[in-house]
Length: 310
Image (cartoon, rainbow, N blue to C red; front, top):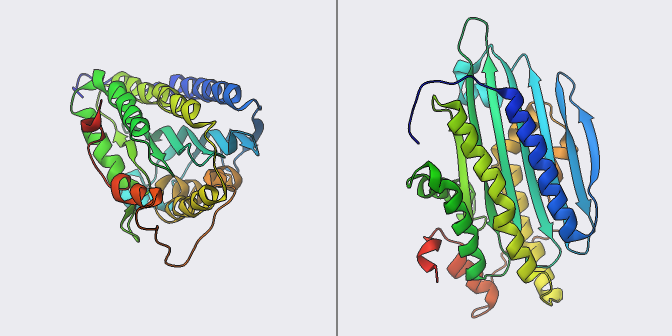
């Protein structure tokens, strides 16, 4: 992204956008699921709060959540100041929308998205701020056309901001959503960006909006294409096994989970991302020649998905 003169940091505009994004995504998912979200508004001791919206036991969405949070305080948690010591002694605000959708049908992938904004301030000093976010896809059964579509939408959302943006954030996503202790990707990636704080605030804000607005166009066609595919106990068992990898990543590696817990966020909302049913099997391996093996062999590895475009 090109640089320009600094612009004023408009936290109110960011918050209004995030609240609207939560509303928009929830409305679209409710239409698909035929069930309304339960809303739980909460306050954080020390400053801020949020709106947690959850679907459970739906015919389409077994468990899903679309959360808005806006927390603030006079002191950052240790996880933030350890990585960014220049933030010590500053007050902070962190706001964002984070969502995870765990469909019931194993042929529909789990998806995750997040867009967020952070600002730290101290009298007499310039504010330190940045945007972050992205989205990623975790299929249980492999469909090349679904993965290509997901990445096409991600690429198109990035395109107005420069041809180098999608490849950079696609690679960052591949590297971030990687279970280091298993040397295994969580899924087929998408986009991940953080610390986006070029001098042009408005351009950075516009990029975050482009990513947030493109999530449903990336995910909804996949839901509609796979929602009526028949499945059985074998597929549900494999789904539960792969969900275990999702849990491992969120509890061991995810920055957002760590920041939320260390900053005194609401635990129920932070751990909303965990699936409703999960299993671990000792030293499990897919059967040779099975479709589950195909997922591991051909999909759970970083690759240029758009090279497979029709």
